[in-house]
Length: 224
Image 1 (spheres, one colour):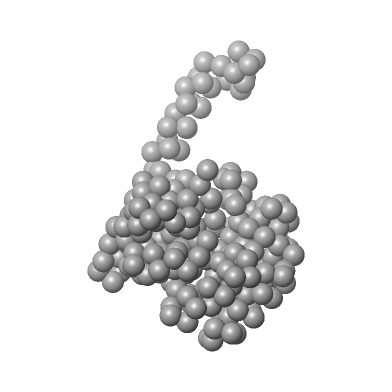
Image 2 (tube, rainbow, N blue to C red):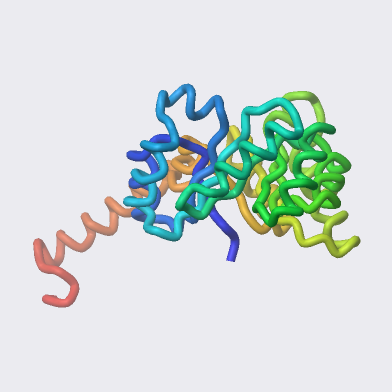
């Protein structure tokens, strides 16, 4: 089954969507954590309390050198949670990923803007690949198309990396990448809310209630 993540550090929103959806965990990045003004020592136990002990966390390094990334990844990996270390898929990041995988550290290659970039990260052993769908669209390219090309390359060459698309602004972008058959996805909470909403749903539900009450009043179906 596809792995569903929320791209947020808002524990309240995690609780909201975990109540109605099979949320696997959360993805974070330095910007998300800084905007929420929350550190890992506070966030991880709070989210675990909501989702459960098997929650998976994707946590990004901030170091700028290969050795710094590798050392930081080792410290993140030692945290008492199911953690995947996020590493930008740059030349430096790919060198770090190769060393991390030699130490059996789970890795997500992030900041992917093209199929070829993601393919190289897969060759380096990245467990997850995070193409930035909306950011690719905003640059005038085709975000969903890049995801489709990347999935084709992985399948054609027998690479086990899972595509975990990120960066969405609307539900159509989400549907487009889901049609490709990606193994995972991370949703901003506003887009997750859009996926649950449709202007025709509540009027339909209200009509059902009205029709029922005209005939049966306050009785429940099993009492009728």
